[in-house]
Length: 169
Ligand SMILES: [Zn+2]
Image (tube, protein in one colour):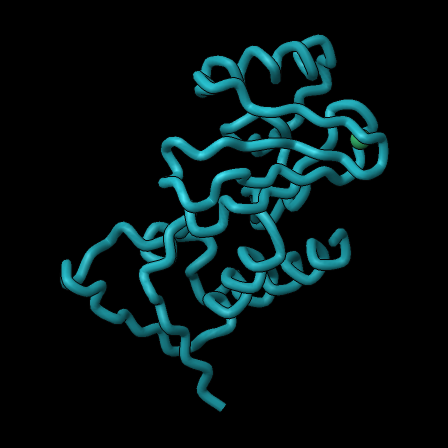
């Protein structure tokens, strides 16, 4: 069976409506949600909520990477066991879905993102569709995935790790 992957020009920001992170208070799974999803991603307001310990925090209006970095330093700066972690850029918290794979870190924002990666890696035939009305472009998530995820010899390993990440949901 030939599995086709259709790249509908999905961008990473398309998956930013819900980002799963590790709660800074109880270290369990927490969600960052977009409160005003009708806005463009530049002026969207994010709020983190943890259902385990009821931690909640809203991104300040001028929330930028600098503020996120500061928060990250407060939360994790004094823990010197800094293993290689992927942080989201709204609050600077570690992504919940991340795992070492092929000497790199495989990560995803949420289940939909994970499914996107899975269908990409599973597909033997990758096809591009033109992004109307701009025609062909390379801003899509699929075209920007790192090479190590795309190479055939890593396919089995990457799929296996994606399954492991799904068990954490
Ligand atoms: Zn919590």
